View 1 (tube, rainbow, N blue to C red):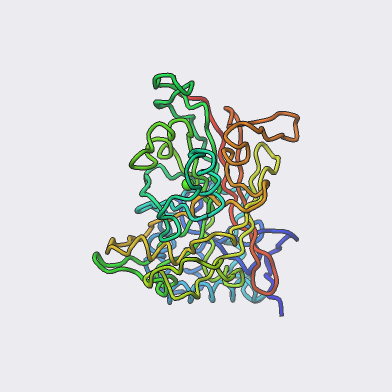
View 2: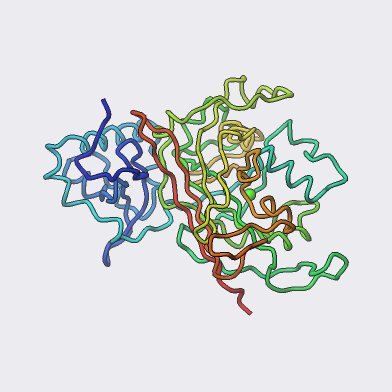
Length: 405
Ligand code: CA
């Protein structure tokens, strides 16, 4: 039987009762606190827990998900079961309805305090596209790429919630291929459509976290836009990787979708050849059937399929802790740009426009190679949910503001 909520959920809503993502909201002048999305409403979890007499409900009065995420998988399961019960049982409507807020009347905040931030590079198509664009005379894949999930540590403090404007970054870049570097606004500003995984339970320093421990540590999933200044990046990235071309801003969605909601979306990972070393799993790795959509000023410019990712989230977690590096509550690791095999599945403008040589055309008649001031990028995603009901992630949106001069 398909579970339905007494809260009205419009057809096509990303937030049916099969989803129940967590976020941090505020209403009027009240302090930010934890809520859960249901249809077009937010349930105030601290208030709901108080009237229901739920033990430990004080974690929902916090202005971030961190205290709840630190509790671990058994508590996450208990709360999800309780939420499903109170939102589907008609007898709970009278008690709970006063604690529902229309989404249109609340403000969403960054859902968690970000610990450490890692960004991977796990789409083979994306890695090969960038290799062909940036290193046309060399093999498309870096030599280590098939042996390990390549990544780098990013800047946690500049991770911003959806709806935050992004100021065009300034930096050193070459305005012509043989020109000397000059400081100024980036002229090749791009997006990267990615999926991020949020760590709830920390690990001990020196103790790797194997792929089979993924669900004990990872709380849920967000959408990520890894804004990228290609011209600044091009000058700085050899030999240590991304730095100022990425660190000015990274946007995440407001709602963290629990892993449990995405269990029906699990798919087999693509075959890996050569077989990965043992610490990266036993060959039973799973991916997720998340269908991303990228809109630029309202025009859909890409539909990247996350199911095609070569390295899986559990392998990424195992690799980033393989040297004993510990996890903290609120750590975020992102997949890297999601790009599929088709032209309209590429998850960044540098790929869609083939480094600016093939503009994308927008519905209003304009065209783009890279982002202009005033442009708005919105990434959303759908996944199969339980009972055959699709569930939505995101959106994560941001608008480019002019450089400060
Ligand atoms: Ca990236």
